[in-house]
Length: 211
Image (cartoon, rainbow, N blue to C red):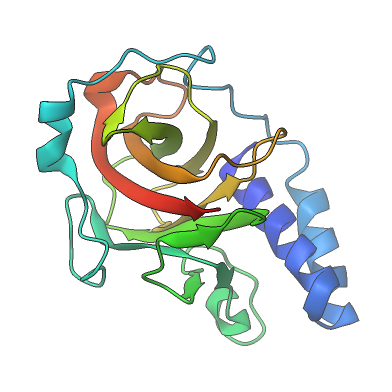
């Protein structure tokens, strides 16, 4: 889905759950404005990915404790139980612009989740982009500290325009449920529409599902 449409679809779902009718109505209008945008293709192309050598990924692990510091292309990045979109982030009073929209993590710095968790998030702010960019995440179950399968448990993709910096990935519960244990998230970066491969990995994170 186009970045802006995807953003407002997510905003609408949050609005229905806890925001005023007015905000929900405005979100619906914005969804309509952007409904003609094209859906983004799956940049992975299939359910499998060429594996990275585990020793190569050791130096790509993102700091999940001191998450507020700049790391690579990110001003900050963290796992969180949720996210918030401050209404004032949609522009100056009387305006509805998205270029300066931002999101805030809820309960940031977390990396352990109960087995019945339906969804959690990786929330981030990117460094200023010199061209539109495509960020993607794919997560894999680990065994004895290693990723042993090329097939991700799940994946998510978001595209950011040059005037956009904030985004988040949705880490969703698999259809057949979580298997307790550790998981590795590989984060990719490329141009919109570009196929993503192992060389596009820009960082990794880990989380644990508690049984």
